[in-house]
Image 1 (tube, rainbow, N blue to C red):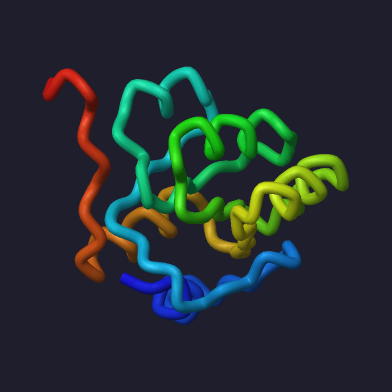
Image 2: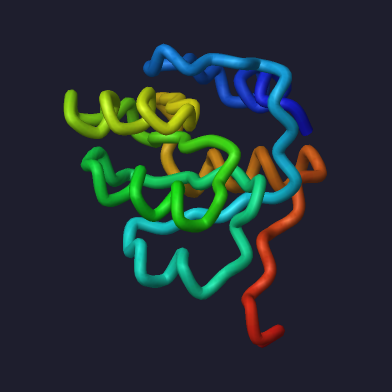
Length: 119
């Protein structure tokens, strides 16, 4: 699924200067605890979160995330946006809740990320 499809599905918009709508997203994962996110293979995935701080960007960088999507209309902090732009990770935002966001993505065929140890 490409980011432009994600954006249309969720009525999302770019909030960062890195805004390539043709980026391919292979899977999805939702979390507010970044320690949970690091237990899964997030490479080229969409990370759905309510976190609006640099920690979500650093985790995304370490995990090779394709893009970060903020839910509930949240906007990332200025330092989080600056960091995302610096490392070229697109930041998007949607007014939808995390529950509805994940439901729409899954119903549209975006698979869930897999845990590293297979459990």
